[in-house]
Image (cartoon, rainbow, N blue to C red; front, side, top):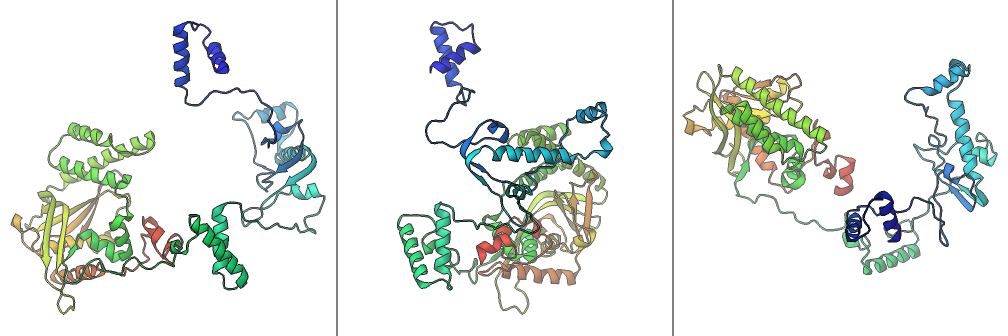
Length: 489
């Protein structure tokens, strides 16, 4: 308390010593987030360990000195040092040293060697110098110099790592011994007895009931019971066609809908809908500012960049919308639909399929046919070839062919579909068209939808290796990847 009062008086020499000064001192203490302390070094009390750099250890001695981490690449650290203005080169020039003929790393190597000798000479009786040998790490060349041996003729013995004195490592070693059939029966029995004692004490991981691979299946009941209608959406068909396991995991808790790309996509769809409805630039800017105030985009500079990207995507959509009015006529935005598909011909499963979803934009072409427009905010647009066989667009057309938009007096003959990518790098929209489905294509996608409905029933879901695996949010639970194998096998 007296030290704190002294520091307060030193920092505020004009502070009143009366009641006002006392209240100010109390406020000074209450507002401290990190308690102040003296910067002067204090002598250790009793048994203690000093942790210091080599420079701080100069001039001091200890009975036992440990120098860990003497690795090649870190000791010696031969990275070239230099000042921002290159003063070291100026010093060489004024001293008459020709920099082209002088090694830059030799002085560094000598300085690193001197520091190690300085650290080693701090020990009165015993010195411990350690390093690690592995695939990416090698002991320093200085270890041979300390021992006075030749590395080419002398192979340094490697001390195997002992088990750490912590409970998780003890449990892991007991489990390994207990489950290893090559171990001695007495040793395995002792390990099992040790695990039982730890389990009674409540140590996590000791009881076999919590070990991976030993527990029974939680359930083998399918997601959809026989006779229950299957609700299928165009996005479901796209996911299930690429990987049924990804659909299961992402649609049942494996995907964070609060992630920034998902939030940004939803915001862009709302803003382009307002732009198509006739909102002015000022109104769109106000709506964007109000919505972005509740978005957690991380660092301020990144948040500003993402907000500008959203603003640019809305502007790109407005340019596309104005340019496409000669070919398309707007019918509605965010049009929901639901249509029941008849059973597949000759199929043993007569499960009813309810095809439902919501289209971003429903347009009418010059022939009066329905055209579905899907706005995409992904940074990489699909190719022209991929758009012709795009599952989501094709299922939208299938829904139109089955009378999903009959309330708008539209014919059942689809007029095609297209993707409008508003996040193109060239600041212009990229439109990818899909030709109208003919009767043969309608029949083919009809079978695809029924197959997707069958795959979503479960209880088994196949993991399929595809080109989108690197961006899959559920690969940590997928048996095709190393991170997922640890959980699934």
